Image 1 (tube, rainbow, N blue to C red):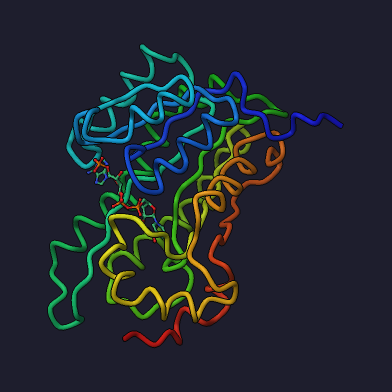
Image 2: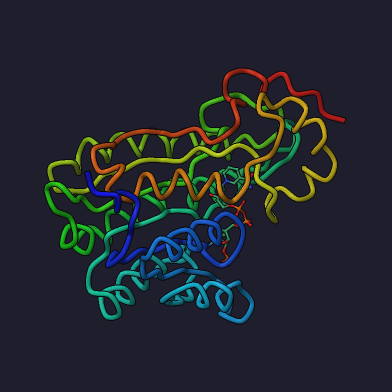
Length: 263
Ligand code: NDP
C-alpha cells in the first residue's frame, strides 16, 4: 500500500474565505500536504493572512465578494485562467447572525442563507467544468463544505438562520454527492464544534469556560483537528468517501451542546 495516502502533491485547491480563521487553517493544511492553493477574500491581500500562507507553498489570491452578483463567476474566471482545472474545492466562507428570538430580523435570513447555503451550491455548479476536468475514476475531485455542529445538533446560542443554513448545507452535501459521484467528484462536509475565530471570539470570551467544561473531550477545536479531517477527505485516503458529514466537535453533537449552561 502506498505510504503517500495523504499526499496532495500536484493537486490544485481553492478555499473560499481563506484569508482568516478556519479558512486559513484549511489553506495551510492543503499547502503543507503539497497542494497549490488559491484563496478568496473580500479584502485586499495585505489585509489577510495571505503572506504567511504564501511562505508555506504556492498560493494565489482572488479578491471577490461571493455574495455579490458576479462573485462566483469571477472566481471561475480567475481559476480557469490561472489554474485550468481544480482538484479540491473547500466551501469555507460563511457568516452567522445572533439575536434574541423576538428580535431576530428578516435580513439575517437573507444574508446567512445566501452565503452559507446558496453560495456553496453556486460554487459547485459554476466550477463543475474545472472539477470534472480534474476528476478520475479512482482519483475523484473533492468538494468539502464547512458545516457546523449547529447544523445537526440543537445548540443554545440564538443563531437561528445559521443553524438552518448549516443543516441545509449538510443536506445539499448529500444530494450533490449522490448526483456527482458518476462524474468523479466526491462531496463531503466537516461539521466543527466551536473554534476560536473572529466569528466566535465574543461568545467564547464570555462563555468559553462553560463550552470547554461541557465538551466530552474538554477543549475547543484546534487547527490540527480541522487539518486532519480535511486532508483525509481530500487525499487518496478519502477517495471512496462521499456524502459524509464528519463531526469534528469532541463529541458535542452527542448531547452536551444542547444542555450547555451559559454564564
Ligand atoms: P470568520 O468570521 O473568521 O471568517 C469568515 C470567513 O468568511 C472569512 O474568511 C470571510 O472572508 C468569509 N466571508 C464572509 N462573507 C463573505 C463574502 N460575502 N464573500 C466572500 N467571503 C466571505 O469565521 P470562521 O473562520 O470561524 O468561519 C469559517 C467557516 O467555519 C464558516 O463557514 C463557519 O460557519 C464555519 N464554522 C466556524 C465555527 C467556529 O466556531 N468558528 C464552528 C463551525 C463552523 P473575508 O472577510 O476575508 O472576505
